[in-house]
Image 1 (cartoon, helix red, strand yellow):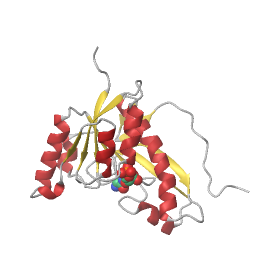
Image 2: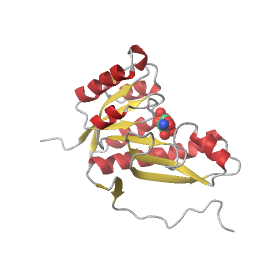
Image 3: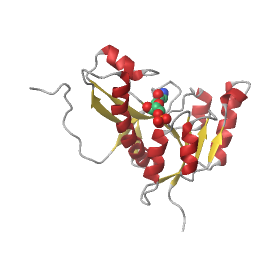
Length: 218
Ligand code: GAR
């Protein structure tokens, strides 16, 4: 029997909770992707242990061990390609990839970002959302393009911002949604449900709520 599941490499730099959500989803026999390798640029990333405990092959490509970014990315590409991965999921991977690296994997790299893009690209998204006084915040899964946090969006989830929120409480509310949409977005891409047109992605199916109002109306 041929394996119809799309092989995926997951890149992490830290605790790997999104990676764990992808691994958990991929355990379902009906899931259209399988995680073939977890790669970290940090030897001490907690995600490596979690992956190993789940029986997933791991590799470390430590950016500090290379003379420059090109050499690091060549080794990273080798670790990805050796695994047979056809798609790459960045899951808290905290290195900015060069346009040459991105061009090598066109429409094949996914990222999860902790904001409703195009708002709050970059770092410290939750503190910046609080400082801006937004009432709705969230997370986005997008295809990686040469420009940071700017590639076509596949899926987003929104959460209310509460008056008493700190960056940590807001991050936790958003993270719970990250764990829901990342596996769903990867499944959509791996199963060919993502329609790409004019640099935008459309996913079909499901039933949308008509609105999220925050704070709620009286
Ligand atoms: C997640 O919140 C992810 O969205 C964010 O890092 C966290 C990693 O957590 N990614 C970025 O900020 C990318 N610029 P995790 O290691 O538990 O998945």
